[in-house]
Amino acid sequence: MFGDYSIGDLGAIFAMQGFAGLILFSVYVLMALGLAIIFGQMGVINMAHGEFMILGAYVTWMTSNAFQAYLPSLFPGYFFVAMILAFIAAGALGMLVEWGLIRHLYKRPLDTLLATWGLSLILQQAYRSIFGAREVGVELPQWMLGSKQITDTIEVPINGIFVMCLTFLITAAVAYVMYKSRWGRQVRAVVQNRVMAGAVGINTEKVDRYTFGLGCGIAGIAGSAFTMIGSTGPTSGQLYIVDTFLVVVFGGAASLFGTIASAFSISQAQSTMEFFMSGSMAKVLTLLAIVAILMMRPQGLFALKVRK
Image (tube, rainbow, N blue to C red; front, side, top):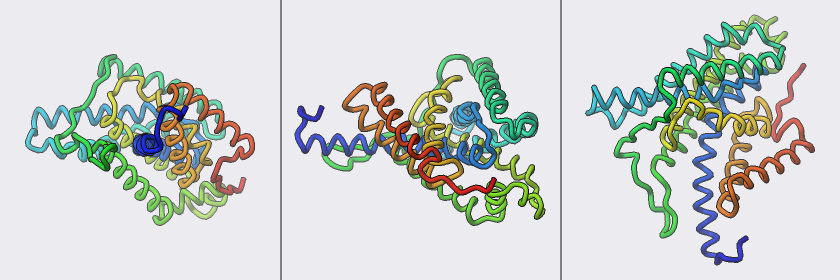
């Protein structure tokens, strides 16, 4: 497999694929952060998580068109407005779904799986009816185009660097909220012992609603980032939902560090192997490796200790 390449070529290939893997890692982290919060804290298997991401992508597309039509002078900065709107739209829909559907199905994981899968189909059809079946793409501002020359043989696209920086900032903000804020302490208290948290005065229903909204809002930001590396269609979210669940389960539910470590290892393994073999074979080998590790460590890489 490596016989046709010199040592210098292999070094350049691994470096290029490593940067490509970092962009994939960024998308995985943004998607998995929200899912890890929802699945880890609430035990809800949200099969519609990909559709919340696509909602964020469509909001970004509409914002881009609105700035081009009505505020062309401010178009270079439209993406920052789009991210905020995507977070608000996806988070608000998430809180509405939690209030209208999810809160009636707690402690019934199979029912939540079926209900959110049905919600996923409904949202896909809604997107198809509203935006059409064809994929849409946003026009990037001029400052996001082009690439950065790292060495003579390695170039990294500027929009990929932006996605990586965005992922770092979002991850840092989530870590601060979860580990330093009063609300984050309440969330962790509910994760550790829901009954005792309720006994000391924490409104667990309110924590659940805001937690679900936060997870969906982060998925909306992931959708905004997704528009910079690919086009958006009604079923685009389904392309990433399996990989996202894989990241969360492999890293350990409710573990922020585990989610990041899992996303990094899976994205780097896939990106590197895809250069030397087909994409499907790289996916199969990655899945086999993860299944083998989960058989030895079913709680994931960095599982938290939770009192049942």
